[in-house]
Length: 473
Image: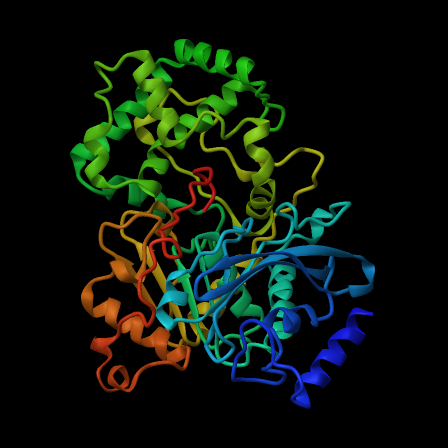
């Protein structure tokens, strides 16, 4: 009945007896039909809700996906996505965080730059986009790239102009993997702060980062506080145990409260540099004179005592599973903690419930890294100078074309194009505009004049550095 009604509505519009309701556009087939009707006419697409926002239509949607793209008849699941619609005559930015999708309207930086539409996809196996029952072997980067490819293929019939892929951190990794497996879909990729762990057991780049980041005074202050938390393990663990009992926190996955305690402490320095800046070093208490409570509260503020509880790990299991099977995870030597650690930097496998089978595939990241170095086309990687995740980053080689790697001075995990030095900022903005097919004539003549096409919107463009668990990119 619904399909019949849509067909009838289209016929009526075509013969001119009824005007299209809502936002109409000037490009593509059936452009006079309301955009919601056009989206919901896509097989497998359904509406969860529409939220108003001035100048846009914002939809929260579900799309039916195969659990296994290699065996599409083997079962399906509902994948959540959102659509920030401006006009089908504008380019479209395809965004993924690599985790859950936000159901609030918001624009990524590339969307603001090109003044376009934005499709945001929730990564498979993050709730509620999880097959039931969950066959974890179907959570890998190739299946996720196929999810994105199917959504793009379906929506490209409506949004016919150029498309860019983007994402931050694990989302930047996701955009890169999508380009690796479906290089003909997108017209450009903007990947922010995307880690690239090519060799799982070789993490010396992280040690070099922490030995040289910022000033010696700042590094010593952070290291001393971290060391003090292990020196005072016994009294601080009593506080931690009391908190866990009061809040019903358990430690089955990680193995014990002691393991969780050490994991949180070892994340402290990493968490500081991932989310904070050198200017905040002065806020760290002096380790020699700080009270137990001050040490406890400081560790909590920068890495979080709740993170390695069963309750804290639950939402992150899909990430840790991927880290333990394909993405890899960092490890640090931390010589300033010699003699005080019992477990060291624990591998990602320790944060996945034991009933979920895990097998690491070392060839997966090597394949992606080789492809980016030799075959990247119209790709931009943006990193923060003081972000530990950028210690192992993507690089482009001689085989790459129109592709760049830039780092924003002093920036953390929230690095952006706008934070680059002036020449690189203009270059990156100009390339994004060109890839999207909307570079003004003045910018084509002089890329130094490149600026975002859409004015800043304090609500849509509010900087959102999602503060995930510190060992989650």
